[in-house]
Length: 241
Image (cartoon, rainbow, N blue to C red):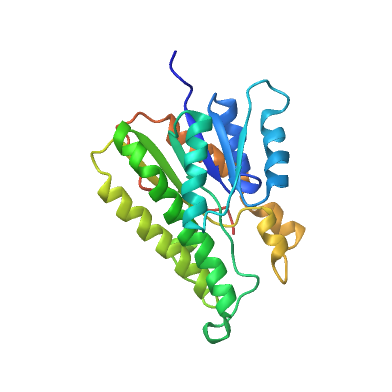
């Protein structure tokens, strides 16, 4: 009997990653969630399965560590029987807008570690098996900042430009391999990432943002397309923002 399709989702304990997990689980995918917090992962897994008998697997790991990323992919492969889809959803932003010369080394490294290094290590770790099977889909959740840099947002914009460059490089290398690569570049999304800001947006501003489910539906749309359909990037913004 053939196995169900499977997805490994980083940043899977909340926000866009959790919304993607919920949608794909409903579509019949076997799901493995990954993030750094075991407690949040367990709560997310229960939320996704909602009492159903089919399990949702979890792998606590830091994608920004090359060793942990490789070990997490290996463990997810054992749990799922293989990885058909990788969704790189883990991400972070700056605590507050900051001029170039005032950005701390710690802030710069934190953002690049998560937004660039984590994406690179996770993708590198799944590629060999996908190439051997000549199939797979890698979806990278980026940002409109991947396409337009903003003043006082240097590290974040740089990280998203770098992530887009990695995505485009990978797409070029994987052409004709059976592996599809797409980036989704959303504008503001109402997630808990805003709660870490020095000045969080108002409730009214949050209400006008995209919702995690909006991005999950785009991921679902990508995965529903036939294998010959190649979409490189989808940029999506909330109306009037």
